[in-house]
Amino acid sequence: MPRRQEDFSALPPTLLPQVRRIYPTAVRVIIHPQLVHDPVWQLQHTSATCAAFDEQGRTLLPIRPEEMSGLCELVQRHCGDGLQVLDIVA
Image 1 (cartoon, helix red, strand yellow):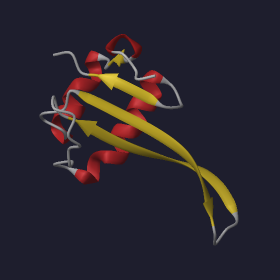
Image 2 (tube, rainbow, N blue to C red; image 1 turned 180 degrees about the horizontal axis):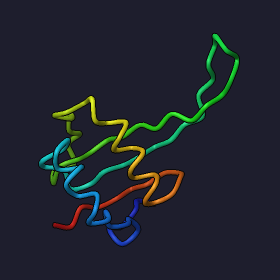
Image 3 (cartoon, rainbow, N blue to C red; image 1 turned 135 degrees about the vertical axis):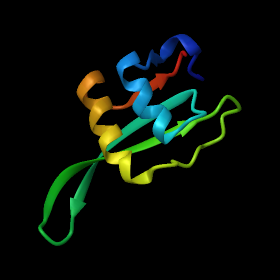
Image 4 (tube, rainbow, N blue to C red; image 1 turned 135 degrees about the horizontal axis):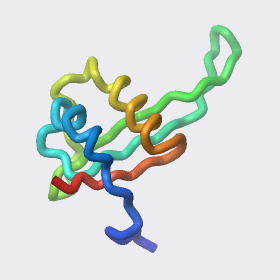
């Protein structure tokens, strides 16, 4: 069953400037944390992947990839852990 528009959360307004710096044309941001196994240290840790999409559903490349980890941390701090699908209403 496809997800409807009402199923997604709105991006908190305080995060909008940071998202616009990295993805100027984004209308949806997805943060997907995954449990990753480190083969060297034999430990598991969480790694978050961020993706953004435009109005036509195309995946966007970040303009400032060096700021991606900071964006993932901000979204997780404001919205909680786990999969986050956030619509940008601006």
